[in-house]
Image (tube, rainbow, N blue to C red; front, side):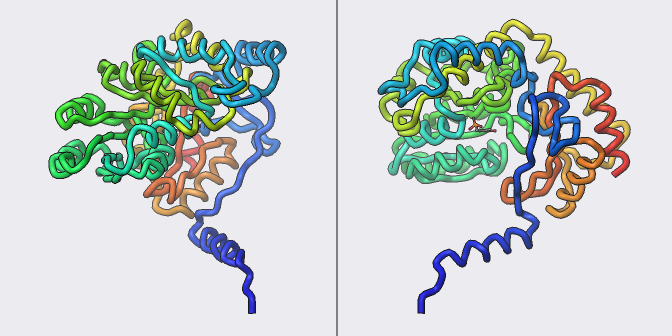
Length: 387
Ligand SMILES: *Cc1c(COP(=O)(O)O)cnc(C)c1O
């Protein structure tokens, strides 16, 4: 008797439902911004990675439109075949200049940048040390590489040092990988200590600046600038799809590593180049980051404002430590988090519940934008107090 080989899917879905881990999409209409139309209803948006409010900026839209009219909608091939345009190189030069690195390479997403880079630079004889709270793309890049992976407790430099002193000599190359701003917590990696340890144990260090680019540092270049570290010993990954309001990922580093990746990163070689529209929008966003520091200043004022009023008026809220525009507060269960997210939505606030397996403990995640007004922050507070 034959059994249905797909029957396990329904069973698996039922298990996901029982754990309150089930996920589904919600439709947003119109332009992105501080307020959006969510399933037909206007809500204040605390769920977006568009920290500087650039994804709906008319200058990015105009640049994307012109690039599409002049160069077409699709790039038609991989960068090494028919897909490479001067615009791609212009963007890579702009990223390298922003990051103060020798060169940069643009990928079709941040996820692909991590998968391709990690799997290209380490292999079977090598060791990866990975922060326990790293983003999925770092974790899966590590798995894809075939290297031995050791996770260290979140931001615990002593544990990292101990593992390295026990294990480093058994491997050829060693790579430490970490988010710079942890995407589901909002805290920062201990970059100065990581640089020291990498130097001491002769390790490469790769940091993922996805949530830091355009946000952290005096001129908005990221966590490296925030800590006033030098980036020359680092491989810096990032995305064009958060504060830069477009789509795509990048790696910034030395001429040699970029040249190597162009030859060895499968997620760059065997995928279609970014469309002209995405590239032109990102290029315009980088110029705005450099020319309009007031956006970043406003963003940090909003963060300070929200933190201050929460501490004064809602001292019982269990805020996770944060040094970024990502603020999370913990809830006791996935069901509780879902319920709170739903109540906030009813009150006109879009701030999602983040649950396992994405994070170890359930929480509500609030991300603040430069374009939020004081009235938006007041409304959030009002909704939180009444729950
Ligand atoms: C969002 C994110 C990515 C993925 O970037 P995409 O461009 O959206 O693929 C990678 N790393 C971290 C830490 C992120 O938050």
